[in-house]
Image 1 (cartoon, rainbow, N blue to C red):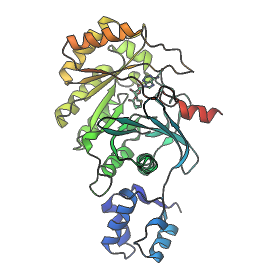
Image 2 (image 1 turned 60 degrees about the vertical axis):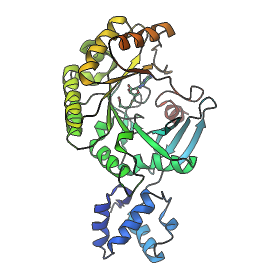
Image 3 (image 1 turned 45 degrees about the vertical axis):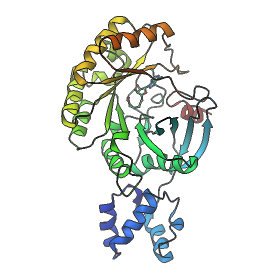
Length: 344
Ligand code: SAH
């Protein structure tokens, strides 16, 4: 029989589960604290639990931890890329970024991805499988333990499409922001999607205060379809309507992500159309000069073009930031460290 993945249970579920085995409620609280606040590496480390109870837990439940395979540290900005091995052998990557306002971790939501965005390295080998809530949490837990520094922000912007793994994502969010766990503020959590419209609408109903980022990358349905196959399923207008609904329901401003590709989406007309799209959503625009990926032939626009694009947005009243990729000296772009590992 398959063992229960204990780290993916909510506190309420854990209490019920242990009560079913005749344990007192406070044991569940102690165990929850060991897993989600003290970030224990195994049951043995939970020293204030009776030894017999720990041994019983060991036989009864699966305790998911991730193994660090490799850490690459950037000498430029302190960014660290982690390569982790999952219990079944798949590898995933996560990134620790150090900012003035605190440490931010970018996590993967799936091993691989089936969305097929043309410029992205994470989707090249397709989807292997969804990550469980415990496996998403563990990326943050292991990084906090390994670095010895508190993580204050989390972005679900690594490999995978979070809304293609919806139930696990929402459970992960509730565990990560729970007051008896790491208690990361929902406002410091961003989920990025390629635009699964029904998922965005569903997320709007969850009564969460997280930030939603939409990977837009093109301002017309035609152009978007060329870059992102998901646009064949959900039209741009449908996705933008869903984003409008998200803003209306949650009051949270959206982020629009826009990867600048030379000669593809970087014209002044594109900037103007982008500003018109962003305004009604009260959205902030994040510009990312496309990261060159070995397997792809997309090129970053010249400095001047990038600059003008940003100024054009600002002239039209849109708040825009230019996100220079961090850790340029390590395997920078999304999914590249993992790909290199899989291929070697
Ligand atoms: N599937 C989600 C989250 C993962 S991708 C999404 O699509 O939003 C995180 C962000 O990185 C997305 O905006 C994605 O489009 C972008 N991205 C992927 N490959 C890139 C590349 N080579 N250069 C710049 N941005 C890239």
